[in-house]
Length: 213
Image 1 (cartoon, helix red, strand yellow):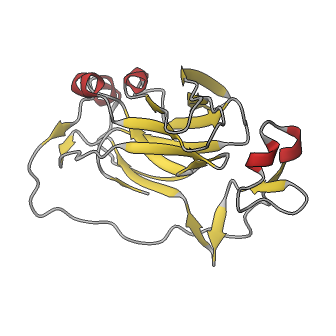
Image 2 (image 1 turned 90 degrees about the vertical axis):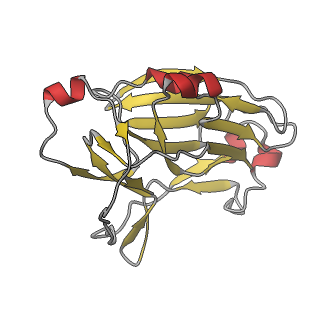
């Protein structure tokens, strides 16, 4: 996952320790615009041999599958020097506009995950109770998917949830699991299918609503 960070100078250790974003009215707000560029060529895709995995007959129906049963898995995507799948955000804001959070759903479809890049946040007590903040849906017929979510820090992974979805239309609401995020440690959320480990998605963990994907 490629992330551009805009960090503000007033972030301090004490601020991070006591951090709690405060929503309020904002007038005369500014904006940031531009393009995230890549110099040089992106790395080549990882070629997954689907014949060595489960549910081969179905998984090869993915539109990106090549004639020999290999599917390219891209870690970096760029066209004309412009990066796609990039998260731009501002760090360490104590207060500002309302979250206006809309459900972030990850679809497990044709042995793949959509979207590939997203943002997630720590659930508040109210969000834990209400649910529906982050969900995962199995869209594949008669295919068992097993979403496994991690908080990643360098080479370290912390399991947040592991929820089997055996049937089409099954939904896992993982809102409560994301209440385990720690601001000082957690930045990267990684989602994978334990049944088909080539199925991957990434998300930036954000702590205020000033972000764009």
